[in-house]
Amino acid sequence: MKITKVFWLFGRCGAGKTTLARKLRSGFLDRGIPVFFLDGDDMRSGLCSDLGFTTESRVENHRRIAEVAKLALDQGMNVVVATMAPQHSQRDAVSKVLGNRLVWIYIHAPLDVCVARDPKGLYQRAKAGNVQDLLSFPFEVPRPEERENYIDTVAQNVEGCYTSILELAQAQLCDFAI
Image (tube, rainbow, N blue to C red; front, top):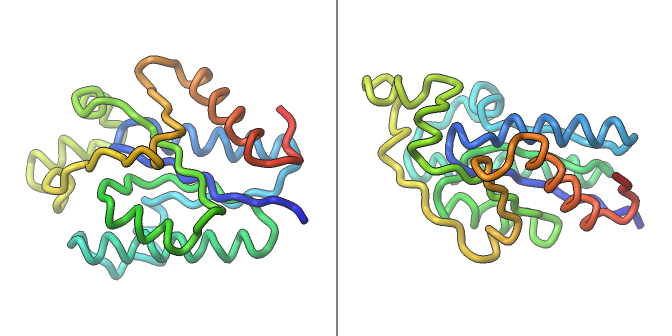
């Protein structure tokens, strides 16, 4: 039986999740490995556009993404996901749906670095009051099992981070060769 996994990259806005997730997706495709990519921003503008930013809505947002990922897994695809998932309740909802087919990858950068990077201008807009609740929900430190796969985007450049994630994927998937 072919092994398929969900590689869920999570961390603060500006940590580098989407950049690394897109590179991982490309790496899978370059190797002929079926992959489905889900980005939190894309999901918020479509399937999850009816949700707000309350704790309950954020949990439901992540549950829906996990359910879509599960459908792709069931079709024999690996899945790469990039979302903030800042709270334990959101990560718990994902884990409940995906179980042992889930690989958490914590993409870390300190808040001050993320604010300085601010690739989408979200922190600037949040400070101006134009982005609902971005800064009002603290990023809860990942539990030990959620940070087994820790990628520090300050300590390594993008290529170094990407190589670390590829090595992790190779360890998870028997038919994967770097």
